[in-house]
Figure 1 (tube, rainbow, N blue to C red):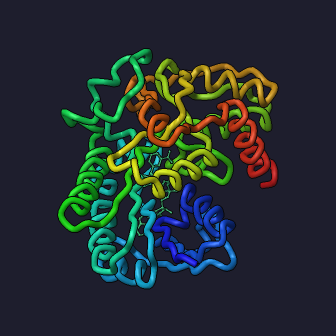
Figure 2 (cartoon, protein in one colour):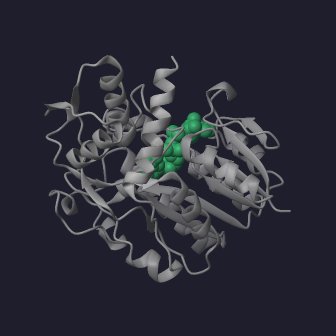
Length: 322
Ligand code: NAD
């Protein structure tokens, strides 16, 4: 049975990917630099290693004896984090660079890199109602400062490792991923988890007022974790996806509409206090799924309402049980 390494396996998406690959019967090595007690999921029957993958030697240890690499390791978070930690985000370039070098030396057969919709050029995202982003919209380049530049550079590095050294690489541009077991507080959380937390807090405290970053009219699409895990493996195993490809939902909502859905799930109405100077990111972003449909005959399908029900219920349990 193939042995697969998941870098960033202690993180949100990595934890679900490890669980799914393990359940399919693969031998898994999961690597992260956080202490085990901070991992989102620690699974039995998986080789769990704590290594800092910015270090070349650690990358060599991580890939030793494995056939495939999924690189999901990065220092990242929601807008509140990436707008204020640009250098830290860019330092993740060391992880992907050293992992690629180690993978080439170890003759790894396939290498997956988790890129982001933050690679897309700012000028294509200045209105909430713009058309969805296609893969070509990353160039001419003007990605999200810090985090997005690192992702775009690392995508390019994958491409050249394929062209120059023959290492098969696959790159997915994830659009916002959410679900249970995700980060919902502490500064790295993203909009769906943050809105769930604020509405749970309002419900538990009886103070029905929440703060919203921006005017609430910025638009996004949100992809449920199960779709992300499935799409990641489809892209990795595909022979036709040879260039970076969108992996995201095309169900576009504004942040106000996201709040409407969570309010309905919670069964309360909240007063919205708009914090206009908070980090907001681009004005509008959606995933054009024409290419993934063409190449894989598939795209993320979980309706936002269904995914949010599960996420809200998990966040509610975490906060209620404190
Ligand atoms: P996450 O922060 O939960 O997981 C990333 C993991 O990488 C963390 O557990 C972290 O400890 C680990 N890591 C960071 N630096 C490391 C190092 N030097 N050595 C070893 N491990 C290290 O984030 P996630 O949401 O699971 O995201 C996974 C990947 O997907 C990341 O590359 C991220 O940039 C990308 N992505 C995520 C989203 C999203 O909405 N969650 C969107 C676009 C792209």
